[in-house]
Length: 275
Image 1 (cartoon, helix red, strand yellow):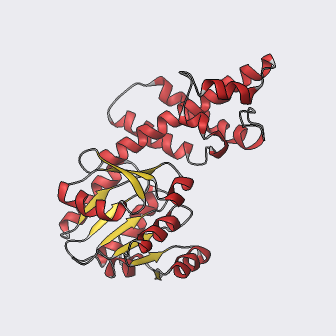
Image 2: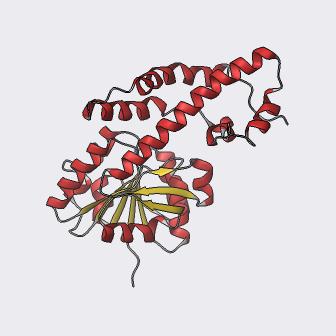
Image 3: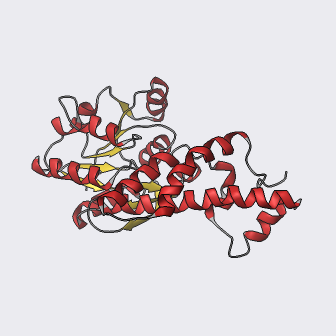
């Protein structure tokens, strides 16, 4: 059976390893990115590089979106130069961007009207796992769409979880990221308290990683930047408004990540391992 032709829009730090792994597994890949440097890196790996989303759609059976924001997902999908203008019936748009659940639901409705499908497919674990082909993909979609997506995503994701319908993948990603930022803010405050006592913070970190204080946020402290934290929490708080939920901790975290980004970049607690 012939392999699906894969497209990717947004081939930055996460997308490039995905391209590498797909090519390694024998998929043909067509890439599009606003950065000339990113386009060159994809071309050097063996991908075909084009200048518009519509060109990606015309050359692909499954198109992975790796752009950053809801607005960018909409921009590359709709309009005369968007994916939906050129995708053939039976094609799939796989949304690996982290966006609001309603964004992928609306896109799915528009795609279904053209005989296409959406695979809700945000990814977790970050750039180092992308390099090793060990990402986690959180799928939402119809079973037959999920199975087609699984053949592609398994080239760069060691774990794939099908969580339900379109939108449920983004719900899972939002909850994952909310818990990450809750824990990361806690690490700033716990670190400040601990430092005030004069304790060796890297030694404390080692002890906590053997106890109930263990967390992925603590293990990955060096890589945590809070770059996307506000966007993530805006998605979560939009959901609380949509479902008329009063969640004070969620609202507080949304405000606290603004300052946390500055603290982590300029004067973070010294959790980092010695040496």
